[in-house]
Length: 490
Image (cartoon, rainbow, N blue to C red; front, side):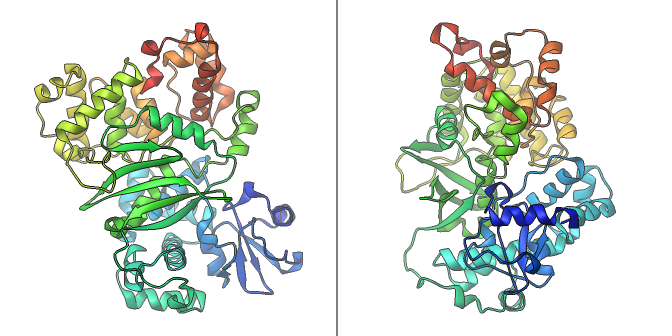
């Protein structure tokens, strides 16, 4: 953190400003620990404070994580500048458990930069090298699991991404000067069918708006929204299971219950939950930029994707039809090609089919479900591109390249590609300008004029889209866009 920013950082610490929670951390020389800006411990004196752009940088400087504010629970930081987005792409891979140091050159190539440049921007943004960022993320997740769950020490080590219990124990003791068992608050449970974790966000978060959006598009047998909770089936690699998400009591966090069968892929599960609910967003910054548009609902988020392929297929099926019709067709699609499974909920009985499975399906089999043959062909072409690894729908990657690749698939035009960029690629500036809902909200039909109107909203046009769609819901029924014509329904 630049020296000239130090006084501003300290002011955020004095006021416990949640806008900066996870954006930077404060190291306290008098205690040897580092904290979040929202920590409720006694405020340290300015002379004892130094500021770091990441938890990893604070630990590299010799500080240990605070046991009160728990830095492992801090929300992520959504960067929007070019260098920041590259660094954030690396952080996403680390968070999802898919980062491999030995394949760093491949990742750099995927992002369209040299490995040297990518390492430089990671250090510039986070204050440490990628491998140090990786180690800190694993250790902090382990700390969280040790504190909040009944998993054995061995399970915690492997769930956090460590390939060796010995290495985990050594790093934990070196970095935190604690034995892992010292963080245990509960005895190991026998027969427990799930673990519970928390993921934080910066308020405000319009949970009801998120839940309403997902409920209207919930896929039968895969997803349900019950009262104030979102539930779904999950398959990642060879692991199968389920999860539920609901607000935590009196905290800016979501409580995530995850079946124990998913512990081996816990990193990916938590990362995908954060993506689905857009938890890295900085809502006050976004609302300030969008101005009057965001005044009524400043906590509005862009719903992401727990399963990238699932949302991409749902988007194709939803082209030019209503939400209800698209949801019905997607339910049939899952019923026909999805793998059956058992969960504690009688409503969750199927997994979304994988790209590899759908790539082998005949066009006639998909068309027989009531899906237009042209779209059936598009779904298979998309599936084959993903299965053949010629297309990757990974959030935080090279969005422009991926959007261009999507549009080479027959049946995928700008609207579909931009909607996928919004929800699957987590691009904060995606803008499906041809959407009929956007046209209705703006009272414009000219693409050129719509793009000109939207120009001041950059780099947050995805959030502007959500506000535009919401504005239609607030209009009198007689003024609202007919459901069947709103391509925003996907």
